[in-house]
Length: 112
Image 1 (tube, rainbow, N blue to C red):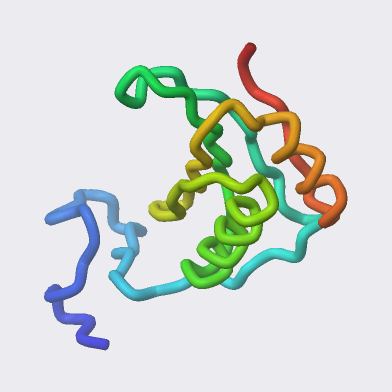
Image 2: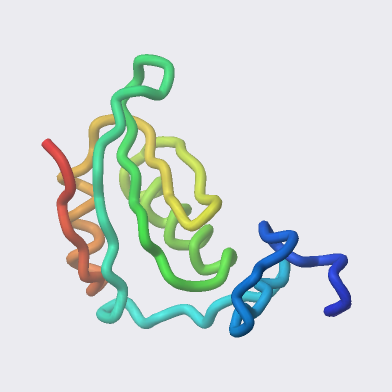
């Protein structure tokens, strides 16, 4: 990993003397299921369609994608997993919360 500035993420310059750059490619260790604090909410703005969004996943991109794939498979719908969020198509929030509970995740229902 080149730490001379090529892979710095987001910040060009900081006046904070204690600031540490965040580098692209650095992955956070995935927390266990019972340590996760996920937020499950509904978004009605995606092209007029309803989608369930799971936020605040802490872990690697691979683990995020595998959780997203498992949720999509068990709900029988499409979606995506990127940028720390899992988007599940359709109004299946209750089913998603039921699956998360069976898998041992801590979650909170956010919004209507």
